[in-house]
Amino acid sequence: MMPGDVRTASDVPALLEDADGYAAVKEGFHGMFEREVFDLVICGSEPMARIARDMGWTICSVDLPEGDFKGRKAVLISDVLRDGIPEMDLIKQAESKGLSVIKLGFVLEDSSAGARKSRIFRKYPFETLLYV
Image (cartoon, rainbow, N blue to C red; front, side, top):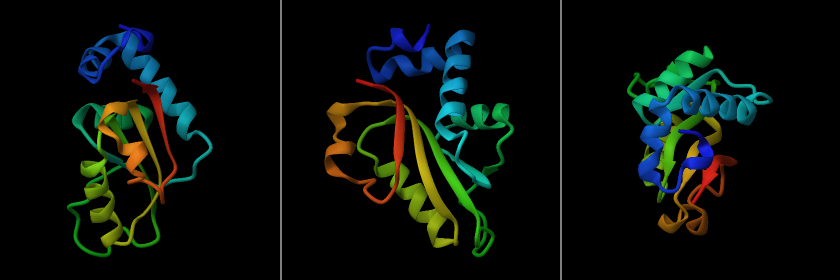
């Protein structure tokens, strides 16, 4: 499966399981973040953690004790953007520990869920590889 074959959010797991689809997503994230300077990656799911590891990025867990993130910059990657609430929860946890979240990236944005319209990420630049 390739990105052009994705029609709904439920297609994303199959995209990430397919070797060519996975490679296309990695390439998309590379392009999305190649000009960003960051220390850590916050992953919204295990498939995103796999991509981060394969890209050689350092994954952070927002469960670390207070102060472990002071002065560090991070990006957040996630598979599907719906309403943005789970991702905002991760961002709030990270920022409460001193981490600065500088950009968000998603494989797919489900426009029917309304994250863009709600402006939940108004403080954060974000990109998606696919939009449905």
